[in-house]
Image (cartoon, rainbow, N blue to C red; front, side):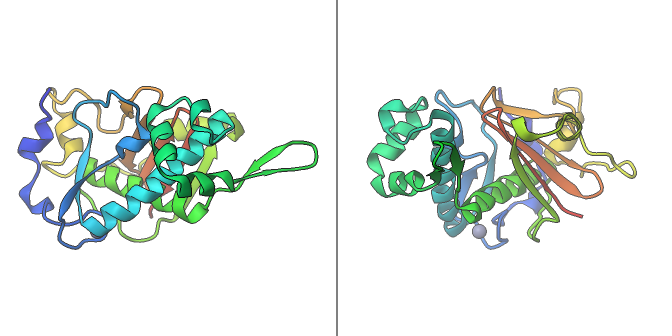
Length: 232
Ligand SMILES: [Zn+2]
């Protein structure tokens, strides 16, 4: 189905890299395909980006996807991994496989703890939050966020989970900008409510963006890892 947003989105809002504000040279899938499984969904969200941002994120996105697959499968041996695209990346990138290998520490009782490079993880999650906010609301958030939280669902309390799964409370009605995708989704033809979750790929990636006390993005990767980024 054609994305109505492509036809109607406000022209003033194009022509900049959504991550750094310079002139864009390319388009960036948000989320990146490495976080999804084949066959990829049609009409993946796409934002404009400069080549430098696009390339720096793409390495960190591979890192996060491979790290996460390692946690889920307990191995970096490509033959033991479930996701085919991650098997391919780790087979052809020994350096990355070695980096991922070092993210686990085993104590004397055989218990595992995970130590990913949090700068890289943060870089990806922040990029995704900014991309989703721009895609849905045509807004740019280039400042550092006030909230950056990331945790598996398994460690969240019932209240935290409840909070995470819902749109954040708004102090007053915030209207999506005329022409933004959130605005178009609110039209009867758009189909989805402005503040609802967007299921990019079932069980693999979903996100919720909104304008509560400030702009925010909630992201779920692999129906396991919960991420919350908020400004204001
Ligand atoms: Zn850029």
